[in-house]
Structure formats: C-alpha cells, structure tokens
Image (tube, rainbow, N blue to C red; front, side):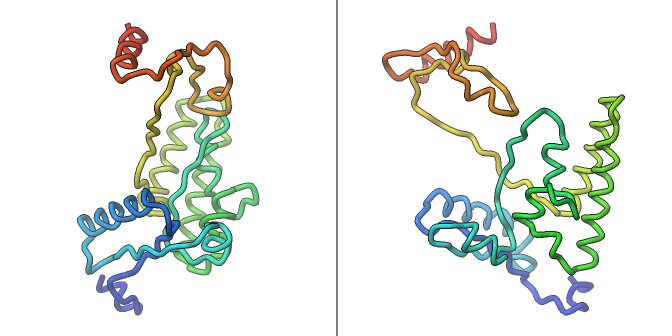
Length: 208
C-alpha cells in the first residue's frame, strides 16, 4: 500500500461492479462477492461498489467501459485450453474477451500491458506444441497460472443449474464442450417430474 500510495493511489480502491437492477440473484451474488473481498482483503484496501444498469449490460456498461469488474464465463467449442486462454490474449482480433470485455487493447498502463503481453507469449508458445499433449497442457497451465497470479482474471464462482425435470439426465448425451449435449437423441422421459429419490436411484444405477 505504501508503494501505491507514493504513486498517488488512494485507499480503499473502489471496484465498480454492475448488476441488473431488478435481478435479486445478481444482487445476492454481488453481496457475497463484496463480503469475500472484505473478509480476505480488508475494507481499507479494496472495496466492491455495486452499481446497477437498466436493461442492457453491453450498451450501458461494457461499451462505455464503466465497470472495474465484469463477471462472465465462456463455453469452449472443443476440448483444448486454447478455447479459453485464447479468448484473453493481447493484440489478437479474434480474442473475444479482450476485444469485448476487458478492452485490454485500449489500455495505456505500461505494467498492465507488459503483463498481458507476457501472458500472450506464454499462450502462443503453448499453442504451437502439437506432438506432445502433456507438454502442450503443461505449457498452457503455466500461462493460466500467470494469468491468475497477476489477477488478469479472478475466478469467483461456478454456476450450478437446478431444475425440475421429467428427463433422466443419465440418458442424455454428455459433453463438456461444443453443442453435442443439446441433441435430442434417445432421451428417457417420464410422464411425471422425477423426485430427488428417483434421481438418486438413477445415479446409483449409472455408476454401478
């Protein structure tokens, strides 16, 4: 803090975090996030300031670059780390998150740009390793570690969906990537909604 104060930074640093004004789940999430920062970093160092937008995050917040922190996610198209890390590289017109979320290519802070360039170099080194999958993944892991350790991205939560269903989830196509899981093929269905006990029995049967 002394080093940053000497450079003119005043504390606590405020992180503006935007949520849709009428979304209670978003409000609850923001409250938890605020408490996490308070518990682990202290209110005298950094503070989440929750603000609201009316209807469109892109037009009201992202494009005018009002937020200091954006919570988002990415679903990969195929099973390789480049699907994730390649969305955040510097100076790449195909890096979706760099061009539409962080807007990093418009940054002026030299230290921040240097960190992003180092991360980008690590990603570029990893993605050209084709003949050794272990070496490729190890190189991507190194890039990911740099990305997280320098707080260029901060993992904050993992979404879990809950639903009432009359479909046996273990009869559906499963895939961590791509669109395969959306195929309506050979689903086992029921006329009534499955109970918790029903699903537990399906789980036991599936993993026998």
